[in-house]
Amino acid sequence: MSWLFHTVRIGAAALVAAALLIGCAQRPPQTAGESASTVQAQVSAELRGRGGSGQRLAVVATFSILGDMVQNVGGELVEVTTLVGPGGDAHTFEPTPADSARLAEASVVVENGLEFEPWLDDLYAAAGSHALRVIASDGVETITTNSGAGHSELDPHIWHDVQNAMVMVANIRDGLAAADPTNAAVYQANADAYTAQLQELDAFVQAQVAEIPQERRKLITSHDTFGYFAHRYGFTIVGSALGSASTETADPAASDIAALVEEIRASGVPAIFAENVANPSLMQTIAREANVQLGPPLYTDALGDAGSDGSTYIEMIRSNTAAIVSVLKE
Ligand SMILES: [Zn+2]
Image (tube, rainbow, N blue to C red; front, top):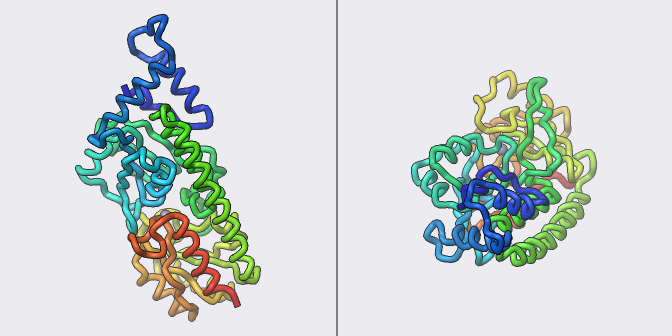
């Protein structure tokens, strides 16, 4: 019966919406004694029986950062599969038949939205998936990029603002609770505990960034991925090598690189940054031509491998912050 959830967009009223759908969708009329909670319990049991994961809810997360958030909210109750793993680039991801099978078996798929996963709609349809789609970015105040040749793009990289991560966690909590209402209180408690950690993380970033003089809070990276970080923590994005909010773009022309080099020189910034999801050679070239330092690669669109200092969302943000502060502070 999970198809009932097919088109539900999860928000604050998710449980109510799910109950309404169950009440009016194409299923045999309820008998007088059949309460909505009984129906929800049946849905929950059926959902949890899917995917060969025993009693655990089968959840697919589109990329590693979301996978970590889902694991934190779902805990022992979920079996999380991540499509684009650590170090992987969701912009240019090419799904395999195995990914299609994962979606077909899933009860819930958690996606970023904002065109970050341009391949997901086709994959979902091809898989014949009936998974509940949870859009983690729902309710986030979006921004557009302002680098590039006079064009702006919707920026999907919301997670670099830790306040947005809290919204993502709330959406994940509501989505898991809608798919598995029996355990809603557990998801709520897990989300509350994790959100408390995120609040500490947000304060940590603010305190660390305060060590960088205002005039040096400038970022240059491979692609436009730090707009939300800049917005929240008081940085300016000087530009990016690719001049795009996606890595799925042509290599920049020599004239574009020359223009960026000039902007870097004019900005007085001492360093630029490579990314863990992009080949560093272009940034090495730009750093050399601009005569600035190439900082350590930042975790931008993916976590680092297990054992790295970016293997969870919280570690990734702490590690990025430490790297940025160490290079840009006087
Ligand atoms: Zn990106």
